[in-house]
Image (cartoon, rainbow, N blue to C red; front, side, top):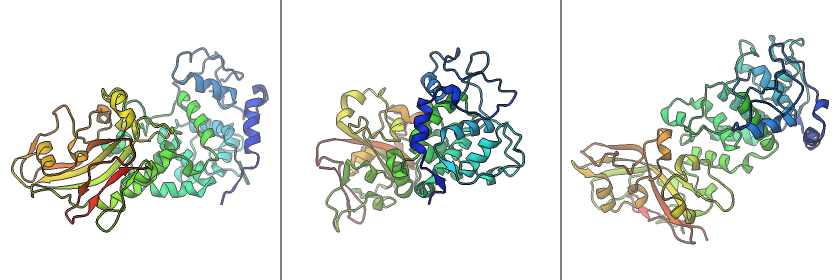
Length: 425
């Protein structure tokens, strides 16, 4: 159950956009801020990537500029400053407010905002055992946590989403995940932030967990949060994907454009049931198992862009605009160990009846910056393996045309059951 009063939500948002900015009330600002009257004519944002967002956020009274006419988009945002901005952005009102932290007394310029966002669940007191320390720069993971906690406090489904994000099959498309520097305890917050579109990784595939949050980023994030607030967790395609993958290792059900074909006793009902089982080869040359399978529509007519698309697909791929508009891309994570002294990876595994989704390299090198292990087309992947050698958690690609009932080449596990995935009619 929500502990918030949501009744005035739409009215407040309308007032944000319709009321003159000079009438918007703000808490007193700290002396160091030296903010000017609300303006969108900042002298230092022209051509900046966040120019439009900064102007919009200023129009809504969420952010302010400085007395010299600048916005300082690259400056860091403190906890107290973000609390003030967020308290203006949220449509929710707490039922009861009290002093949240001993180091934020009533006389503190940000006290009202800090107390409000804490009462609303954005801020968890447990995370700040030594006090709020309002002048400390806000990190990106800290901001993601506030967003995720605030949504969860209003809708229990977001709590469930946070739980799902801890699944053993979690796959979060940021560099820190693949390099092992993203703490598992932070999976839920990054999952919610990325799944709702409130936050994204950068051009290098990094989430920049511990980096301070800039004023440009905050303007953009606040606007995205306002779009997300009040929506159900299940309204977000990307979040549905991340949740399903974390639990099962695939986004097939969320994808919805392909399905398991006519499952019966001889076929798998769900593709993840085959994960971890040895795939059948014509001769005993290797042990091959799958662990994940991700489905991506590179150019979705329905607008449902996969949260995994930036990792697996790029228009820079020479095949992208020539082949992929009419195809679904399927990426499989698998492991294999050679049982012979000279296993030629592509040739032997394919000759042994292994489907193309295991035997085809990924042509788009966008995945490289994420740090994932994948079968490369440039020849840098090992071409042969001695007995006992192999690869672990390597990604390969397949694709199929979007025509109804087309599909991937069927595969079999050693027990004879078939994995048969077709395009939905």
